[in-house]
Amino acid sequence: MPDKKSVAQNLKEEAGTLAEKTKAKAQKATGAVKEAVGKATDNASLKAKGKAQKTEGKVREAIAEATDEVRDAKERAQKKAKK
Image (cartoon, rainbow, N blue to C red):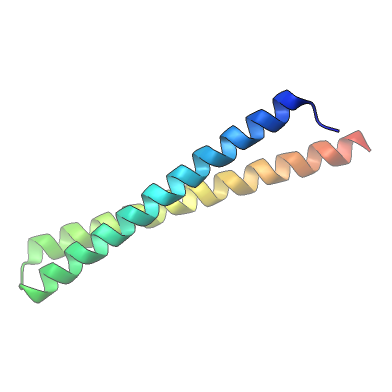
């Protein structure tokens, strides 16, 4: 059974990546809205800013996913090493 410190640390890390994923999704949505408004109003600058913001959100979300994968792989390796 893992000690309480590692469980608490794991929960803290999961909460952090969940918060980052949520921020990334919000950023993607905001960017999509800006891009759509830019298209609708024929405002190239707003469209470009929205597209850039949406892309940044996608990248941040990918980083959060990768962080989760690394943490999970580390946990699996530690469990395997304890057997």
